[in-house]
Image 1 (cartoon, rainbow, N blue to C red):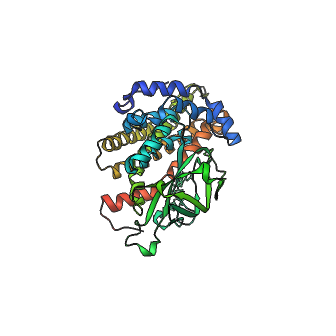
Image 2 (cartoon, rainbow, N blue to C red):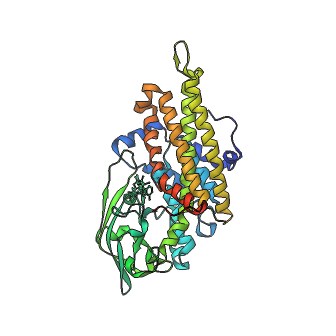
Image 3 (tube, protein in one colour):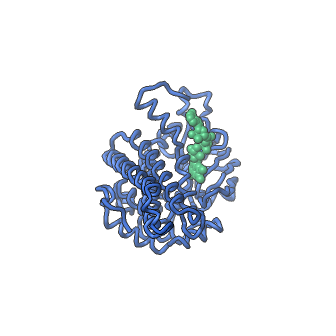
Length: 391
Ligand SMILES: Cc1cc2nc3c(=O)[nH]c(=O)nc-3n(C[C@H](O)[C@H](O)[C@H](O)COP(=O)(O)OP(=O)(O)OC[C@H]3O[C@@H](n4cnc5c(N)ncnc54)[C@H](O)[C@@H]3O)c2cc1C
């Protein structure tokens, strides 16, 4: 079943959408349910996406990728979620490489990008958040000290997702203590850490069990040596490199939320038509119809903002506000749709076999990560409305 009156945005890249839909059909609810129970990683699903080239969408053709715009990557992730699958298992493989592409040197690009494009190297661990700094990124404490031709890293990260299923990690660490820099955002640097080597030499990965199957971890660095040639761009300028990648991340995750919202609305609408109580379909009651209609409107509005943010991004124009708004509106739309879908299903919404409770748990994440709703609102208040900074 498809939603009526598809928008222009959801019609774009029709071939890609159809191909993603076909691939996802091989990974039905039962596949995800089983993994959810055992907290296992969807290796077969990720391998299929890699083999089909979808995770290399944003890598330029010169480096073996598809050279597609962000809009196309957004369409891929939206369709994955819409099909009931979970792109969070591998979405970062699409965009983390942007740090190398935009800020790496030629040697790094030639070495890493073709291997990431083919899937020979997995770069899908992005280590920014720390237990004591949280959202206040510049307060992070993990330190990389330069010693000759390498750096020595000590510290701890938390919520580093997919680290156990990645060969490389993009690490944000301090290289100059906060007290010795003019601006808090200075003195942070970005590194590629080869976890295959580091795991036997001071790097420990510990899985964190959560309410969703997300393969997230905490990571401990105990004198981990990282070759100096693995520094991306200039030492001390890492924060701005990370920020430039965050717009892409927010837009792509917003697209996933739009896909989730569509899945919930389609699922709920189908159920509301067939479930008969008091001698009539429950969907005949306005109390069932209105929450679904409302979440449909919210999803369509969010979809337009995702489309606009991606358009600006692809045109290399400033898109910080739009990326943030897309992320917040889409996460709100998917959460509203999740709630309406669960309510429409009544008690059956709680039963595993309907997949509603699993997707409900999964989409709740996007109220918090990769940036929480409060921080998006603070950004808009300060940078768009010109109100005083609140923190
Ligand atoms: C499953 C999962 C996967 C994740 N994956 C990754 C990953 O791969 N890599 C990575 O680096 N991080 C990852 N994260 C971390 C995620 O980005 C953070 O959880 C998120 O940014 C919030 O930070 P925090 O948890 O430290 O919350 P805190 O910063 O402690 O905030 C807690 C609450 O207080 C609110 N708050 C804080 N400051 C303010 C303020 N000034 N004004 C108003 N409200 C405020 C926040 O909005 C939030 O609701 C992941 C998190 C989860 C749960």
